[in-house]
Picture 1 (cartoon, one colour):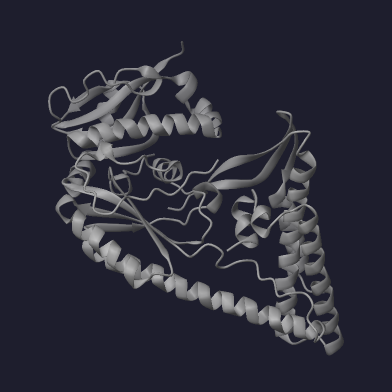
Picture 2 (cartoon, helix red, strand yellow):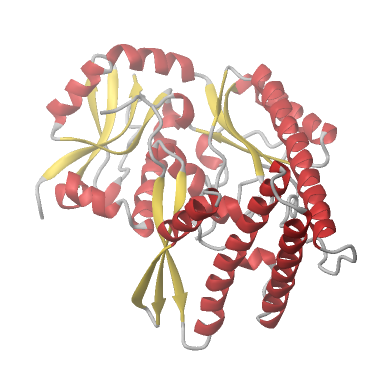
Length: 97
Length: 72
Length: 254
């Protein structure tokens, strides 16, 4: 008896003043989503135990840099993690709680 | 569009159903439409009121995830 | 002006004289009661240009249209529910004419009797439980980890595990609230958690439910809710109502 949820389309309204920041917010949201997916997948692979020490270390260092890069990007555009949680609909749960 | 969750003041007994604060739109739509209301995973980007681009996030993310879940 | 049809808002029984007065529904059209076998279907005229099958499909995609119709529909429900036990109908239940309305009443006659009995003297209360804002958040480990890549991953895993544990504890609180309030209610229903962007609330929604409560039990229900707030100060328990019995009186329509 479950039906598909009703989907309401989203509109990202930009104006010439804010378009750069708004688009950047959208881009950063997607990057953050990908970063978190990579993180989860990396931890899963480590748990599975089929990686050697060097691979684990390389993964960790790579993800650490990625996290730092995200912090830098957010700071540059004065965006918090909450700001990035925009308009992903059912996918939004991947980025937040 | 966001609507806040309605908080009912403690100890206030309303006899008349019509007298309480308005039902939040999200709660109303959940009940009147019979399914949960969800925001779509697509975004229409508009500039100066003109719709320009539609980003199909769901398709994009699905693709990435499939690649990731399949180990090499 | 296109073809007309009847929009069905709610069904009640033995309503008092003049309870609709000069009340208006969608499009400013007069509300009317179609009486049949002791039941009264509350209807008004609508245009099939707007509410016909194809038009409806289009219109349901527009939030502004949806909001207007939902609010009008809700106003009518409130009015009818104030006058007696009421079975609200879902949005956009259309009948071709009053004979069509009566046929529906015939189809639903037994179910309606049961539903109206169930909701008489009772009202709906909506309860939501939220985890505190900021829990759980994106887990930032702090990127200057001295121990190198493996250490970073270990810390990241520990942080994510801690977050999962906190979520589990929070989930149990939600269950406790549901169980306690179910005991006070005549009927209870779990509803899906709502998107934070729709609610405007930042904390995770742990529980979304509806309770059908005897009017005489409402103060006790409120007292129970307050007691739960004292028992679980780490969460936010939001209680809204009384509402017409939306979650307990909907007939499956097809």
